[in-house]
Image (cartoon, rainbow, N blue to C red; front, side):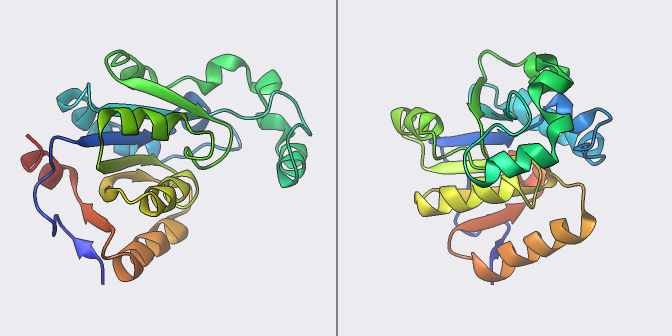
Amino acid sequence: MSAQGLAYGPIGDRSVHLCVDMQRLFAEPSQWATPWISRVLPVIETIVDRHRRETVFTRFLPAQRPGQGVGTWKRYYERWASMTIETIGPEMIELLPSLARYCPPAIVVDKHVYSPWPEGKLQAHLAARGVDTVIVTGGETDVCVLATVLGAIDLGYRVVLVTDALCSSSDATHDALLTVYHQRFGQQVETVEMETLLSNWP
């Protein structure tokens, strides 16, 4: 079973809040709209406001045009031609305005795939800061958050998931992923709600 609550103690001073893909293209009407974003946004804003300097936002950057990409990503952007940057406009990749106002001191790391780890920028930043714990919020629970969490586990980070600050466009797979975290990743993943997090993170 997983560690529900902070089973491994309070959050230390080598921790970062990693907020995944809270962007306009997922919040505004589109084929990738995630209605839950409006529900979790106030929770995420509260965390960021308390820990501005410890926050790193990731942004998912779609292909520039349909059919662009390597391997299956080429097919992906043929299917999702309507979500390429030349169609939606570059402004849609921006963070939601209520979060963007925290940058700086919060920083932004861009990525072109689900996971923020392969391109190396995020890991370099965390290593330079001596980070040992990542606190994960954002969306989607079953896609980019999943990729973020699994990569963090592989790199040896303590992972704290803030369950009331995660969103998905699918209730069923959101719930299924929380069950997987609870039952299969107990040594690496702890799950808490925002109030518990903040009361244990000075």
